Image 1 (tube, rainbow, N blue to C red):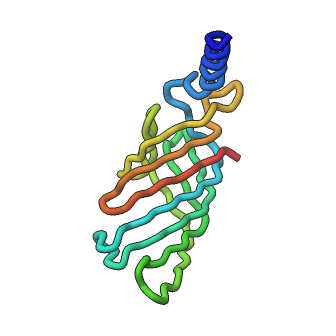
Image 2 (image 1 turned 135 degrees about the vertical axis):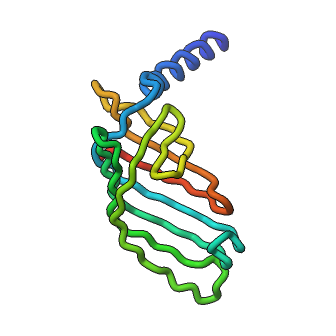
Length: 146
């Protein structure tokens, strides 16, 4: 009985994961809700007091031109200042992008990437999760297709 349950569970995992691995390189196209986090340790280049940063954007991937437009707001503050005042940063940026089955490159920065399932009947990813270590900073982002 236990062996049958394990076989059924394994089959369920394989079936559940099938949409994620059905395409080696999902397409990024259209609008995604995008949240980005960055944390830089004290003494990091350009951040002697450390830095914490949060960004909330709409990411528009233009598949035909391989361009990404980010519009939204970023909020950042030093980590160690006793009276740190967060700063707002309006975001309206354009970058070239490319992706593989395991990475997303935005401008000149390459992130590790994990894709969610593709939209039914297409190769467009419904979700994307990225992370990287950039010098003394760690970053991560989540993108959900609108």
